Amino acid sequence: MFYSLGRYILLLRLSFRKPEKFSVYWAEIMREMVSQGIGSLGIVAIISVFIGAVATIQTAFQLVSDLIPKTVVGGITRDSTILEFSPTITALVLAGRIGSSIASQIGTMRVTEQIDALEIMGVNAPGYLISPKVITGVTMIPLLVIVSVALGLGGGYLACAASNSVTTADYIAGLSDGFNPVIVTVCAVKAIVFGFIITSICCYQGFYTRGGALEVGQSATKGVVFSCIMILFADLVISELLL
Amino acid sequence: MIQIEDIYKSFGSNEVLKGITAEFKPGKNNLIIGSSGSGKTTLLKCIVGLHEPTSGDVLYDKENFTLMHFEGRVPIRKQIGMLFQNSALFDSMTVEENIIFPLNLFTNMSRGEKLDRANFCLERVNLAGKNHLYPSELSGGMKKRVGIARAISMQPKYLFVDEPNSGLDPMTSILIDDLISEITQDFQTTTVIVTHDMNSVMGIGDHILFLHNGEKWWEGSNHQIAHTDNKELNAFVFASKFMQAAREKL
Image 1 (cartoon, helix red, strand yellow):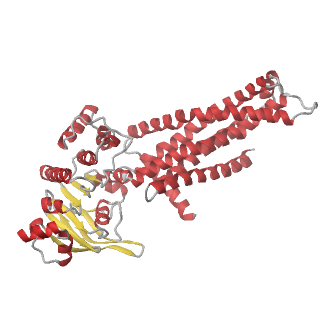
Image 2: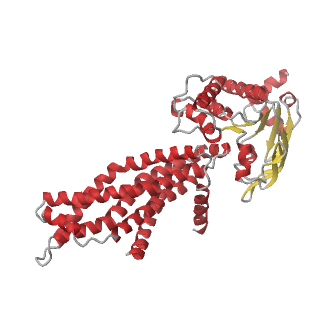
Image 3: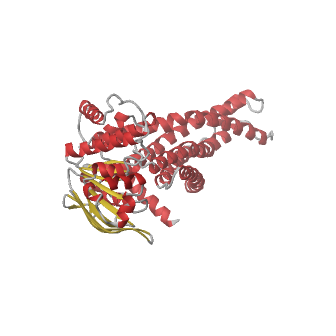
């Protein structure tokens, strides 16, 4: 475990060396942003709307007492979406979508000697392959989480409109009722940390792939599993520290 | 010129290379031959820095490559071109982008100059007009030729070739051998080729290094190889009945 941790840290250190040519790295970052960001928008949108809607319906179902105002449903949906559902569930889904893609892409490059070809040319292979992906992860995943929050709250609104449990007016009033800005900070910190975890762990797993097609698949699986575990662990630590 | 001095390489307790010393001169096709598992590719990887030797030195024009750190090696690596066994072309890039890639990173050439260079390299390997194809659209022989075009794009002083004929038909193999030989002559590169293809050995082997069980077993030229009395080398070179018959006619 300590061997892997040390190798992971050394790989990250190599990844953030001075680039050979900034313009080439910048082009790679832009390409990754389209791939990771735009490419994940559809799946993030779908899960966010459904999660927001389900959270609203289930909260309304549990708050049946006449002593509790219906606006509370909007407040609880808002807090749970911003604090937990959007950053964490989006990150877990993205670990599967982006993480497996990164690990298998870099793993395939390793087993087909493309990484050796980069090194022979004098290119800092970790820098060229990993840094654009990590930079993209820590910028695009927070943006996707913002989209997820907006769509999740929108999903809650649609659920209210479609059912009779809470009126849309109560829901909207609840969204702004007792708002504590710290939850946005927590959400942003989680999104950035999760973005780093997904991209760096999956890059690490791909970069040290040895063997052939079977091992590339194993690297992708390991990358996703370790990312998910680390996301949940980081979620706990950030919540404990910031709330 | 490349000199390797007393190279040892072990993987755990498995000693793959055992004190190999040799010299590879410019303008010559230097072949490293040997049976599977004899340490040919490991030696090549030690020379280019993909493996670190357990002990010994690799010198590029008297500069000790083994002692250099990553940054120190970059100027030498810019002078190295390498063709890999499976070509190792970047899948996500077209033929043209593959060839231009090192130029983008290490030169300040304009877009037009880079395209001219890419077209020149493609013409050199008889693939003019194939600029916009992806590696998945190429045959094995075409991939090798694009690999050569990429390797020569930076006008290398040192050219390394790993199993250039693996998976190719005899005609294409001869074409690739001739191409490598022409490039070596035209650009006076120090070319090191790892192979176990006997057509290559007899056809272009100006200087041949025969490895056996990780040791340098024999050294000479393709003219000398037919008349050697080295038992292991003879067993390797004249393994087929065709080669045995050819030897009898010599």
